[in-house]
Image 1: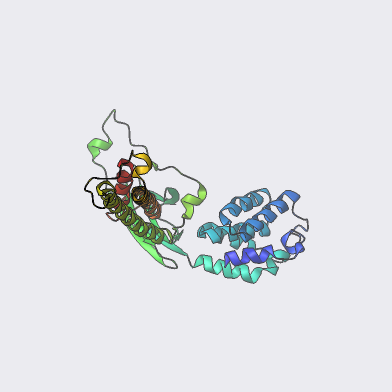
Image 2: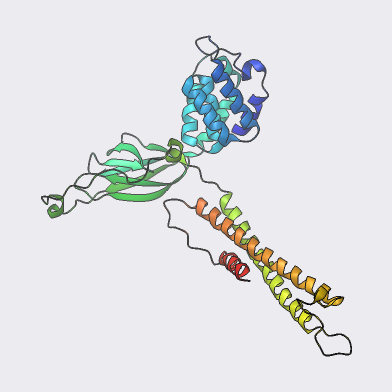
Length: 344
């Protein structure tokens, strides 16, 4: 929906697309902002939403209007930044009587509804009162919370900490349009450790880097990564099979080359250093050996590259809160293929 809207805006009349409609103060947007919006719309029309997002962000930072908020929210929605998309689309739709927003209000409202279909809530209760709460490294207040926390669907890491208590870190999955509940009761640390003289108290706070705002807020999962990884793994196994065939074929052709004798004789007629490899059929037999060798090298190298691509896809698809991947047995043939082709 958001991508369709971006293309729709790209083909809109000049007045709507390039700033002919006035904002609330009846003044046209600055030329710099108009240029940024035009550039962002062009990038979205080309399907490069990841490049359009920072362009719209700069326009929004320069002049915060319903139009710049809407364009930023649309780009965020297309990339799966659900929370920030909801914030900016709601900001745009909250402007009464804005001509540009009114022109596209129905589509903006449909996009906002689609964004909210990817958002859930987390209600955290527990003790002690005043314990600090973090979700994915971002502070979310203290216990008890006044209301549930709105979060994008997917797995999150929740950390609760308080002076004199042991920290608690848990991982759970947020489901869209549902309220997930979590009860956390911290345990007191031993008094002899907490109050021992000369031992500094532990520093509270997350040890994780804050990262950029989008990565912390709601980094989207990429559902196509895992299928891509399995395709690459299967292709790696196939390529290694081709390389193995080439290696066996090379050995067979090499035996034919070295054992070939002229009719009526028992003496080998072919040699690698002989003029023209021994002439006649010897040259053809030698070329068969070389072709099979090239096929083997190609198969093993391709298998190694595809295996590396599969590992990369699986690692990028992994939820940070889950255990690290072990190297799948399906991928190891590709790595063996690289070693074999290098040693051949």
